[in-house]
Length: 234
Length: 179
Image (cartoon, rainbow over all chains, first blue to last red; front, top):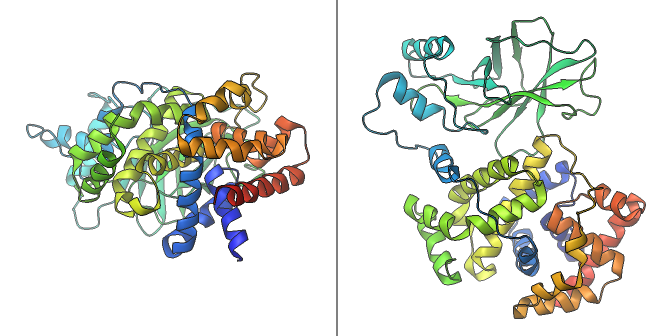
């Protein structure tokens, strides 16, 4: 790559016009390429005055609490024990909103499963939520690439649409398809080598045309979404 | 808002694992950064998710911030903009490039006036004004509203290849002008 190409690529990356795959390649290259890092930093500084275009706006008041809760090793309040403690340790990375499962049977069942499970190879788990924060699917994943889903609150799918499962590893910009889930299915299992389930990975189910997304990327509404976290303290 | 040297010092403390320092960065910068994310996403829930992702990245990557290469506020803005762009892609949502409100602020003369409030801003403004009008509009739309090449093309009614080439040429002209 000539210095000119590198500078132009870094400029496009900072500008944000690169298509997702190309942006991800730049991000990968950044770690080992000091010149590219320098070029990106130069453009960020050059364009910094343009950030004054966006009017300042106060974020939602609970946002800091959400961020703090999602930080690795977030401390649980000391008096919390058992299920309460697990909730506070493991539900925080939820990408949408604080999850208040309360005393639902789903939560109790999950908690029992977690408490009974031996610690060493902690599975990864999450509950996919609807856009109203209703639990819809339990997800269990192992780090080798197997995922198991069980519906806890089956919802009708329009007759001309299918559900498609996706995973988005942290740091990735494009999700990977993990297949189609039949509308009437209450369970779904898949084993993949395309991604390695890890804490923080987003799992989502979108509504797609028959046969799945024609583009290889989600095209329809996100029905359910959740973020994997380790089932034992980490 | 924390002064720049203070932010740089706080980022050093964040890199060392100081949660309190991260919180002070948040308190000093969250309104500015949330505004940036919302200018791209135009959805407060999505912008909040983007800011959350951005602060997790800030806590992980604070050690990569190099004060000799730029101001901390610019580094923070870069992380937030990319978190917002990722959020837009993740949600599989096309940004509405035909929104009539979109971009008008970006190209209004008084908006360029605001950019010139600092010496760096004056230089950037001079260099932007040296570009052909459509190159300038394309770059401003992309930076401020997160439009992709194809969205800028739709907005300016130009072929995609033309927009890519113009933005690239505009960037290289900017680089030469500002270096």
